[in-house]
Length: 414
Image (cartoon, rainbow, N blue to C red):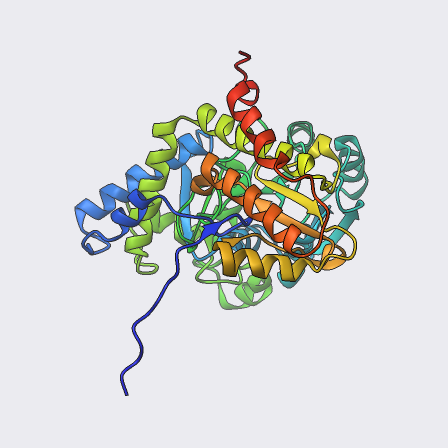
């Protein structure tokens, strides 16, 4: 029996990831396959590292992707740094802080967590005070948590970690290429992002970067595996990096001129990443951040003009995700289903204590477009009316248009 031909419908994806992909990226991914040690391919690897340094705003020698989703990059960073019993501090203000804590625990860390109410973030001084108290080896922190739509300020925390000799590892999956992320200036030692959000490349790679402080630890742990006597090896075995595939010291050699035959690179994904990074820099980081900010402001204006309310503290809102309170008595999942079935628009629900209470609308990367904002607002208004919800008819799109025609969000007052 022959299988049916695959059918993939066209969608407007307004979720916190994955997002729509620029057609130029998809075209690049259809290029011919090269061997992983073909000089043309290794040259592309080197060029991709250069582009990553620019996008991540770093001068670190090491900036490369891990093959796998963003979680693979997070795990690679943490498993390569953490030894059994190491103290790790995880300030958590949403679902993904909990993920950092879980991964660290799986690699034997003594994890200390901090929590604040979902919809808020920490005062940096509170985190700094806890660092001084706990004296961790690593602080693992999410920059922008899509589960709550909030963004944690990092600069002061990074400075404090550097002064106190603590490593700062940052999950910047939802923020890189959508808002300002200054790896070096904020003293971030290890940073991980993902292709499927603001970089606007299909899910499957986790770009990361790390500095000499991390590299020194990798070198120390790698030396444990070489040339030790058997009895000594047994004693030191617990200090080895537990994962083979996610061992940054080996991945580093794969991306170096040594070209360690560690794994077979995801050829087509690398083509896509290269093109995605090239397009980011072609647009310009500042212009790209301004585009994301303008589309966020237009969406917020439309949501509020419709008569809906936003969730969370606006002072720490992430520019790439907007959380909307589901009106009391409205079936949020029914609204989402109708948007998808009748308008081919996908928005997201949420997790844990916010499940069924908010919708999350992403404005990331290639999905962050004026036409997507206007169509989404119009469709959401229609679906809510169909569900019997009282909204201010016709106001949402007009409010968004006023943002676009004012130039305010781009910093250009007319």
